[in-house]
Amino acid sequence: MFSVIIPTLNEEKYLPRLLESIEQQKLRPAEIIVADNHSKDRTRDIAKEHGCIVVDGGFISEARNRGAAVASQDILVFLDADTVLPDRNTFSQLIGTFIAKDADIGSCYAKNIKDESPLPTPSHVMFNTTKRLNKLTYRT
Image (cartoon, rainbow, N blue to C red; front, side, top):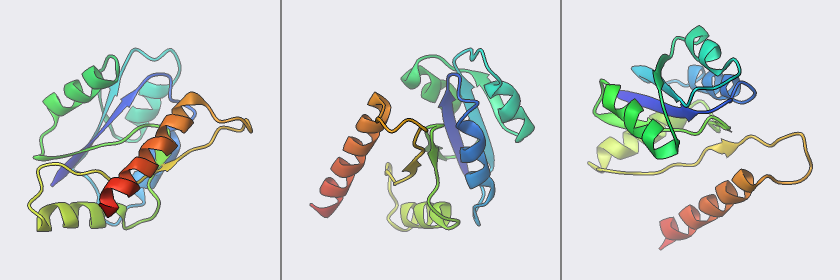
């Protein structure tokens, strides 16, 4: 029904939490594709341990495109490795809405995993800014 594509680069710290949140979903993807940009840590091993298809990625847009190129499904869900799905119904709601609206593109909310550091990283600032913009545009 749908494929999940996750671009990665040295994500061994975060990837297991995302994959576990995907595994807990009521509606599961047909496949999970990890497009890895030559990680130096255990990212690829972790992905394989969770049954993911692992392909060579690149920088973020290239990794997404390479993942999409090998996807077997028509609906593609792109997730970042440092996120988790908020609850067990996330994919059910996302895919259900996507199909009901006969959408060509959509976006959804995923929780950003916080580092142990009390200071936000640039990626967390960007994530939270994007999240707020998504809420604003959704309302309008």
